Amino acid sequence: MSSKPFVAQWGILGCGWISSEFVKDVSRPMSTRNVSDVSHAIAAAGSRSLSKAQAFLNEYCPNGAAAQQDGLVEFKPKPYGSYKEVVEDPNVNIVYVGTMNICHYDDAKLALEAGKHCLLEKPAALNAAEWRSLVALASEKKVFLMEAVWTRFNPVLLAVQKAIHVDNAIGDVHCVYSDHSMALVGKEPDTHRCLSAELAGGPLLDVGPYPMVWSLMILFRHPKNNMTPPEKVGSTMMKYRTGVDLATSFTMTFPKLNAIAYCTTNLLSDTPKTSHTRIVGSKGEITVQGYTSRPQKYIIHTYPEQGEGEGKSEPKDILVDMSFDGFGLYWEADAVARCLKDGLLECPEMTQKETEMTMSIFDEIRKEGGYEFLPGLERIKLDD
Ligand SMILES: NC(=O)C1=CN([C@@H]2O[C@H](COP(=O)(O)OP(=O)(O)OC[C@H]3O[C@@H](n4cnc5c(N)ncnc54)[C@H](OP(=O)(O)O)[C@@H]3O)[C@@H](O)[C@H]2O)C=CC1
Ligand SMILES: O=C1OC[C@@H](O)[C@H](O)[C@H]1O
Image (tube, rainbow, N blue to C red):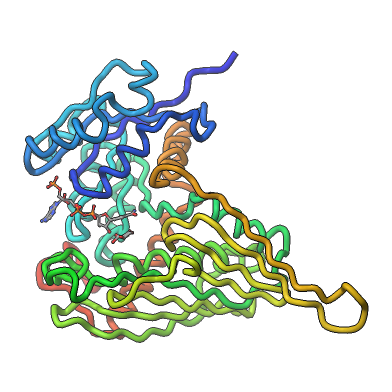
């Protein structure tokens, strides 16, 4: 006899774009991805405007999320005109923070102080000091806290990781080249959240987490690297007229593997969907397709073998198509629900230490590139 699934009861902060994708994804039937141990309910959604929260729920989950459609919980999603009311709603046990970068620290703190678990959109905070303070608060309150780097839970990334770490598909891994860029300059006004200094924009914080996650999943988490942080980090940054970065590249070395990651991000050009990440090993390479954040397919290309012997030297290309429906935030949501079910306060696949390492690396890159946040945006300064 199967037991009832554990239900994550979400409270949504901010009724913008990514929150809408999140709500739509957790409203999809659990059977579409063959999940029966956990499910999701939307308990509340909060906006700075009540009518926006009402319209958001009407549009994106009129019948509630999967657990509500399946009759696993009785309550309906409730709209609020403030974030505070969401974290205080007794039906909310986990808060999803889908607000602007500059709000992440305050909004996560609001949730944690109310004793609620928290899934916080990337970038987790503006700097590593803010993140460390959130981690300390979550630990004091004994609640779960995770940065929402959803790509970590995408089956394509996990399949590529297995091909390299377990199946030795490309031999010894040496280079990860990963890009996430978007042609926004000239198309969007300087007030766009990615171009605005007031909103702590710039590609490093907005999409830099994606080349970073590919590098960390393939190199940092390689069994032979044993979670050893990169020995050296180098970077180059070009600034935009508003003061945010416009184009940033960074490299990270992993001497235990004899490997290096080359990460790039800019707001001038779109990343080709045919090849956003290329991972090169001694016997072949893997090219990943789709968006860097939302990979869909990959090609394993094995190099011809050197030396004598007929048929021995044939190169091979294998395309693995794992295209999926929906946005793809549901795998992350399911993983978080499982952590809550098991009473974990952090997720082993997306640890608080890895977020701290990423934030510290981003702090160094910003320092080297001369990207300083506008006064008052950082709630805790690095040298406080
Ligand atoms: N995981 C992913 O794939 C993605 C993650 N993101 C991350 O999610 C966050 C939100 O991005 P996105 O959804 O695209 O942005 P949107 O502009 O669509 O939504 C952000 C929301 O933040 C709230 N907000 C709170 N304070 C402010 C403020 N001062 N100015 C403007 N909005 C404010 C608003 O909600 P309200 O008006 O309802 O209060 C707004 O709708 C970013 O931090 C981004 O990095 C973004 C896109 C994809
Ligand atoms: O996380 C993200 O992924 C998709 C991009 O469009 C968006 O700007 C970014 O925040």
